[in-house]
Structures are given as C-alpha cells and as structure tokens.
Length: 474
Image (cartoon, rainbow, N blue to C red; front, top):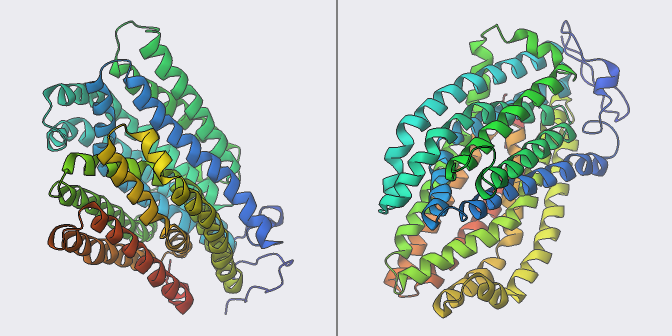
C-alpha cells in the first residue's frame, strides 16, 4: 500500500512508496506549505507583469509598422491573427505541461516530474518546427480570407515569410515557462519574458524607424526583431533550466515517452479545441455585425470594445495561470481542501478587482469612446459596448479563474464543453435574434455577449463546487 500524505501544512510531502522523492528544500514551497495568500501573491504578481509586457510588444509592433505604410500596419495585425491558429497547439501543450508537472511535483515524484518536463520540451521543439513550416507554407493562403486589399496581402506575405520561423523559439519559451510555473517559480519566466520584450522593442525601432543595421527592411524588420529576440530568450530559458531544479530533465531529451506525451495531450487537446471554438465564435460575431445597419461603425466599435476589454483580461489571465499551478501542486500533495480554497480565494480577488474596473469602464464609457474614434456613430456603439459589458466583468473573473483552477486539475474537457456551449449555443443565437430579428442592432450583440459570460460563470461555479474536477485523473 502507498502511505498517505500528512495533512499538516508544515509536514513535508511524501512520495508514493517505492518512488524517488524531491529533496526537502525543493518541497518546502509556499504553493503547498505555509500561508495560502502568500502563495497566491508569489505566483500572481510576476504573471501580471508578464502578461502586460507581452501585450506591450503587440502594441509596439502595430505602432512601429505605421512608420512603413497603413497597409503594413494592417498586415501585422492580420498576420498575427492568422498565426494564432498555429499557436493554439503550443498553448494546449503548455496547459498539459502545467497540469502534469505541477501534479507530479506536488506529489513528490522526482522521476515523473523530470520525464513530463522533458517530454513537453520534446513536443515543443518538434511541433515548433512543424508549425513554422506550416505557417510559412499556408499562412499566405489564409490572409486573403481576412482582407481583399492586395497591398495588405503582399505586406502580410512578406512579414510571414520571416515571422513564421518565430514558432520554433516561441514554442520553447511557452513550454519552459509552463514548466517553471508548475514547480512554483513564476519569477524566472518573468525575467525571460522581460528579456525577450526589451530586445524585441529595441529591434523594432532600430530596424524600422532608424533603418539599422540594414536600411529598407520595412515590415521585415519587425519580423526579424521578433525572431531574434525570441531565439535569444529561448537560449536564456535553456540556461535557466540547466541551473534549476528541473536540470535533470535536459538529460532526458533523447528519450521518447509516448505514454507521458499522451497524458499531456489528453489534457491539452480539449484546451486547444476550446481556444479554436472561441476564435471561431469571434469571427461569427464579425459576420453578424456586418449585417446590422451602419455595419462599418458597428465593426469599428466592436474592435474598440474588444481592445479595451482585453486590457481587463490581463490581470485575470495572470490570476488564472497562478491558480492553475497552485491547484495542480496541492492536488499532487493530496491537499484537496487547500486546492479548493485557493480556487475560491483567487476568484474573490478577481471579482473585487473587476468590480472596480467595471465601475470605471461604465463611468468613463463616453470619454473612452471619444478618445478611440472621431466618428459619432462609432462613439455611440462603443460607449454602449462598454456600458453593457461592464455588468458582466465580475462574472468574467469567476469564469476565467475557476477554469484556470480546473485546468490545473486537468479538467479541460469540462472547460471545453462549457466554453463551446456558451459561445455557440448561447452567445451567437441570442446575438443573431436580438440584433437582426428584434432589430436591436449592435446593442443586441452586446447583450448577448454579456449574457453568455454570466451563464459561463454560473456553470463554472457549479462545476467547481460539485468537486467533480477533483476526480479527474492526470
């Protein structure tokens, strides 16, 4: 029989009988031991900075591309949307990595922790090369579906002919970051992300605005900057892995363990389907808005609203990633009560944060709309978007954070079905009927979006409270 793990918070986690265990100093981590609020803080603040820093690069890319031409600016945005379809697989592997590595680390299983990390890295590198090739070959055929402008398509193809290579170092960065977070280290990924961001931004301005070191690179300078900065950062991540508790995983990169990879993919694939389903629903909303009166202003206001709302996603994304690692480790340590408490506590933080931001969003809706567009129709639609969706922001916190907690437990299938159902069976039908059949126009779409978020939050809360996610085998 396997000895049960002590419930005392101060007692070291013991491994299953007959399996090697992590050393006491490695297991003396705040995610499993000590104050829970301290664990939440230690994981959350580095992730918040990381998400903000990553979003800054996207803003700079778009801003710097404006120095080339407006077509180049549009091409950068559209190209990155196209590449998101290829990145979904990497994101899904990272979800599986966090769930499996954190569970094994919390349980004290040294061998399985190293194996899971190594197999995740193998998948990241191999899939990175495959996705890079697919992006280089296929992305140029995807762009025409986003725009009919020959200039935008030409600039996008020029950009993607270089940027597709980014998939290789990006995959390594994504998976190594997930592995670090899984063992409770959020600071190392933050340092790597900041290193990547700084080099990328400097490269953007040097190559495009100052035409250095090669004049006339144009939009290619942005692509080169991304590839070079990510490659250097990937090298730093390998160096950090070599000097971390996960160092032995690097010596296992020559061993292919299909059973371990199946464990990771079993968790990751539903997450990928969930992301693709969400992306598809976004495009469906786009086509609904194309059918309403003043559709140009409607589409512009939707873009503005999504961009403003995406700023609010960043703290929630950080909290979601943080609670995922905390829950995974504590379930591995057989501390289910602590895992449940972590999920609710982080959710309360998210709700409080979003209530404040939602009040600001509602109060300054008109001002924000005027700052974002000079067109009166767009201003009106945008202000309504912000006011209507502000009521759903606290519910968004519940949905995102509890889904992050259940991801850490490996319960990604439930998340997938909840997300697909709320987007495709609630949001889109309601949007269609309110906007077109009831002639509510854009407001009908905004009400549908807010309603689906509320339903999603209630569904996630019921699933989390039921405790069924605790029984998922990882």
